[in-house]
Image 1 (cartoon, rainbow, N blue to C red):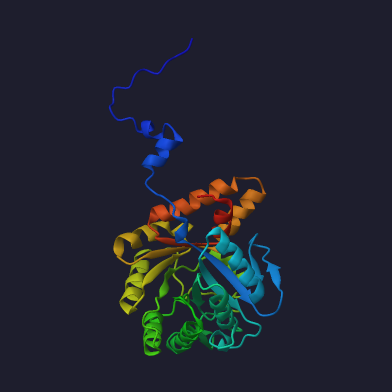
Image 2: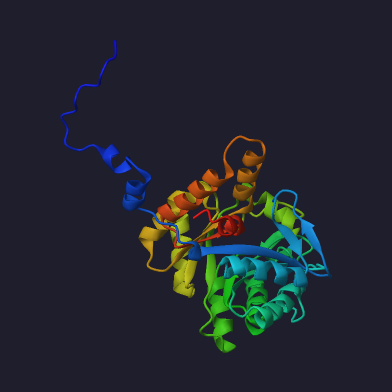
Length: 330
């Protein structure tokens, strides 16, 4: 005997708006705009180098000529915004390669601007890739020095600006660095150059693959004394408001997936654009699940990117960007 459901007496039936994919598209509250995605790149010294990153399938460390090829190929698919990380040939205690006019990022910037002027280049400003100890600031006796680091970071930012950077992105999490960089850029005639601040950057286990890619793991201790504690969200609001007061034009929450609540709070707190960084570990997690057959890569990626936008992000830095554009996932 077939049992039929009794007729419902309620007037509201939410399933009506899910009846077909056309209706679902019509009533969708979050629409992903691919123009809001930013593709990260790792550039290193040398010639004709392409080193695949084992923990990040599809991502490589490349020399400048291969970087240009990658950016050009991506640009043909529609990617016109990138984030650039440099991997120097040599490191020292002070990270001097970070502000060298002939440093890897500075040389790459000039080449990108010469050959691909239609691409927006955001440059990461930090010291961890350039210091022999792997920390994001100056070190004395095992302590990370805040204020002496600000001068170095400001020099790095100015060298990027002079080489053609379209946007400066300090990721170090030193107190006061946005204000110091803003003052230096303004004094150098770059008062129109925007700052994308890594404002709420958490000390996260999701950075593991990036540290392999950039060779930036700390040689002692960890970064908990300057990156944020994962247990805190009110503190994120404080960091964000401080960065805006110091001159940040865009604020960032990093990582994204474990901090969707922080993205949501940030969006409701401020009236400046909010960026989210869909970090290396989040990317590698998807790739690993797909490789093992545990889930569908396309559906996973689309759900993750949509959730970050739904939480309130205006733009997303993601290693998935290339796959999204090449395969037309949105």
